Length: 93
Image 1: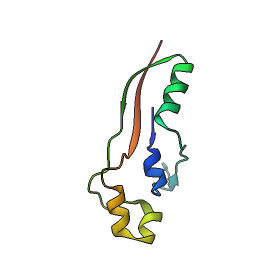
Image 2: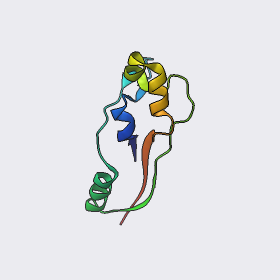
Image 3: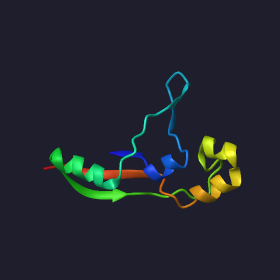
Image 4: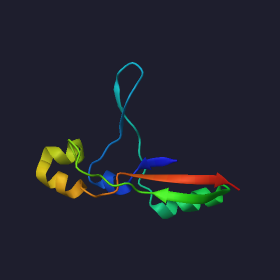
């Protein structure tokens, strides 16, 4: 299970995917903390095996469209090394 990291959302990050028809779509995202995911997973009968929070590095367009429109240099500095996604490895009990 994975989602865009809440820290990236607050910096203006938005997940985009391309539909089979070629249309660029924005995915909904939730502002959940790691503890929210853990509580929900355990309550639903899962064990949490692992959690990963890979960080942004140097990427083209870092900072997200909204943040870049205000100040590209600041957006890039804010995003660099910020967690990009939160990914969970769960196992049904």
